[in-house]
Image 1: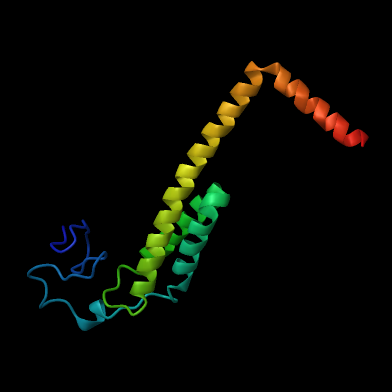
Image 2: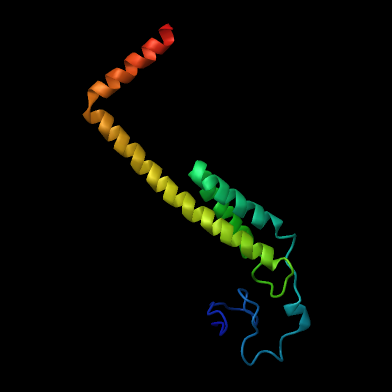
Length: 142
């Protein structure tokens, strides 16, 4: 079944798990218990992981990617409940987690490219490696 409001495909329910919209023609069959469910816990961890993802994305990109994925997984639980008071906080956390994930991936690619370029440059100019070895030896003799 496809939700008319958000376009999400789902089965086995008369309420869209993505936005909480009641399926057309099913509104009279849905009970209050179905629409009044609440998620377990509070959405603060979603926001925390979103902030951590964005904070670590520039310094340690792999951590930014990991925290971004965790934040997105945790955020998924809060969007299936329409009108939940913590949904705004979860939405903000999801946006931060997404941004952290994207920045982490981009920074990982950029840093990998820079490292590969530096290694290729050093390999093509062996005198640079010789100078580095001499500098290290001189540093230990002082």
